[in-house]
Image (cartoon, rainbow, N blue to C red; front, side, top):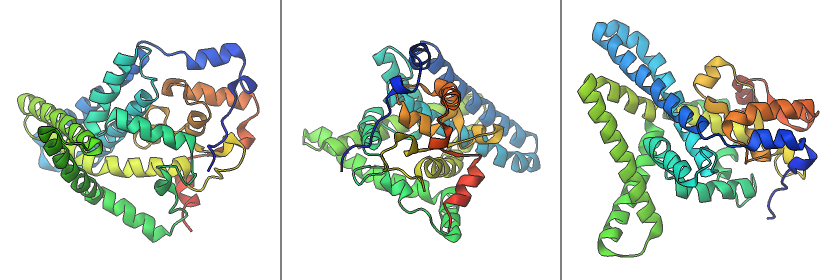
Length: 319
């Protein structure tokens, strides 16, 4: 099928506004990465302190800690996504390092593989060639089906299924590298798993030196549970049950308004402005809110799919 129609920024923004929202900062991307890890540190060591104080306090605090950690793990993935678009830093080498190591590797992604995959998603959004189509095609679905998906996420089944599929491929890739055989996909998986395990080892070492096992176990538990849930909700909100495929590029994704709790969990770093991102993918995440306001000033909201909150989105995607 043909690529989806793109928006023309010259028809939407004044030249000075377009220049303002597409100018990359040399420090904002770095500061967001540091912010993500600062929140991770505060949550993990705060949770450990609660367990050290009293096991009842630990039990009470842990669900909140896991929610915060899952939200920041999703946030690191979102920053990796910005790196895939070259938006974390104006220097390409710095951008790629930020997108590969402190963001992508922490949650098990490879920047370069993701970049190729994701740009195809932008080109063929919700078309047969879209590699992300499976994330939105099942919707609308039944309420029971959605509950089962959420249950699998929160019990670690989704995480286990992903790693069970990834690790054997990575092992084959490692064997290919040792024997100089071909198999680029498997080799990429091997390098991705290697970086993922290296970052986890570093985090474990920091945890053991500073406090013991508890901070790392909280991080790993969140990675296997709340991160998976928040990632799924974010994926659903972006494209499920949207009228993508029409000739109007303003219909190709959903923007969801996000309050404080949503921004801490399912919508970190302005990822809720997904319609704006698909319309103008050269805008860094920290300028998406400004882009949204400019679109409102220009009278474009009626053409867009905008939901008032994530609860409303979930109500839309169940039969």
